[in-house]
Image 1 (cartoon, rainbow, N blue to C red):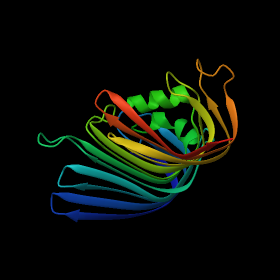
Image 2: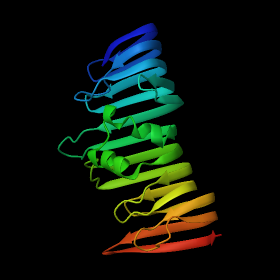
Image 3: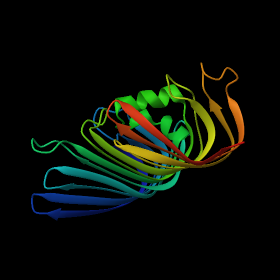
Length: 238
């Protein structure tokens, strides 16, 4: 929902009978007021530019995308140009709801400042607030089946750079982590190639955080009934 804005707009609309529709818009706007989804607060932007689109297929799946989208909020949060895609298919009585998300580049600290304006699952918002994450993620691909707060199936793949977060509950804190991750409801793996990292293990290592000049190698895990299997490959710490 675009409430207001000043600047240039080019719009294309495609209609395919009653079952499908698609809209694409190129924008170069200032003084923008918009609402991303019903029930969310109004997002006020000093500038917004890029290509945005949305489509609905057979009255069921709904997709939004952006190409070279960049903006600056009234509060000073800046999003550099990035591409994204999000797909949502609601439950229809035969299949559960499903979702997909892809983002080429994402600054996590900036994202955490904007969660109230976007339709994030409640659990994700609470986790972001508790852990204060920083760093960048690139080539993120995420998919899930079921309730987004507690999905039955999920998969995620991404690269990350200088990742950091506070320790929270039983999850350790860390900073300076660089590598890539592939994970799902069945298990996953992380490949690390980090320099000048820190690991924080409250209650386990009293001198936390522990500084590390290098942290490299692979870690994999597998979920089996009532336990978690861990494996390590060429893991080096110095």
